[in-house]
Image 1: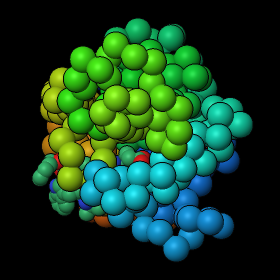
Image 2: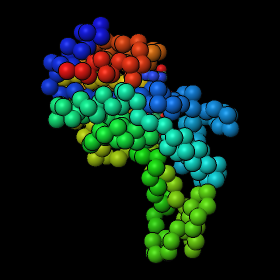
Image 3: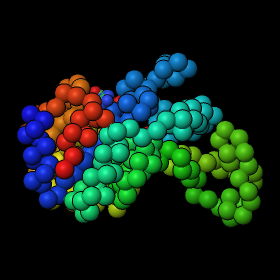
Image 4: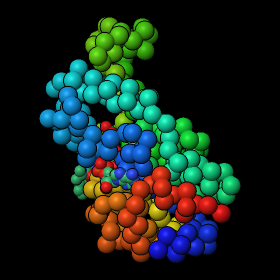
Length: 238
Ligand code: BV8
């Protein structure tokens, strides 16, 4: 089946790749499902990654993001990330890369124009609409950093559950899905929407790359039970 999918890649004019946490697993970033190791084991990530959790316990949620930032800063993109960046460089305008990941590893591997649906964990933004005081004075340090005048807090610039995605990014992703000849769905359980919905609106053949079953297998023309950093270099070689 790998040869068949490789032939589809070579024949496709417009390839879309949708990635999830499994794309970064071989870099050493735990997936969402098995992210809760050690200190965070007792927390459901979908409970932590919400505005209400942050407002209820800002220090705990901020520290969880600081923990993840530290972990991600220590790892490197893997062969899968690099194969995607190299393919795009060799074949301009043939690949649209859409990711649910906030780790920035695609971008660090050299991929440009990545449609990061859920934001970037290394960016911050104000929790509430900033007032003059927030913008005029240096941000006061702390977990989280905040405005010394009004206490407005800084929060990670990621999309939390219950929050809308950046519309221009989602629009571009939906357009690419509706115009693709082939969509590779890599390392995602296909549980979180609207990201998973992109695989269901794909006009081209959908290929799942995942060592385990996913919620999207029924939408696939082919399922490759394997790992991203091992399979992508084979599928994307000229
Ligand atoms: C919203 C950023 C509009 C934060 C994230 C429709 C149906 C049902 C529910 C909903 C729906 N529409 C909306 C919802 C609600 C919700 C949702 O989808 N809930 C789910 C859980 C049921 N969606 C939202 O809230 C979205 N917003 O809809 O807004 C709105 C607004 C107001 C009111 C109404 C509507 C926002 C969703 C985004 C949330 N933010 N991340 C942060 O990171 O801290 S989501 C986060 O979790 C990730 O970004 C990712 O998207 C998701 C984790 O999923 P995966 O990436 O797939 O990872 P997972 O661990 O699950 O699986 C890993 C896979 O990799 C596994 O399959 C494994 O086998 C595989 N794997 C492992 N190793 C490898 C591998 N594969 C390949 N190679 C390997 N080596």
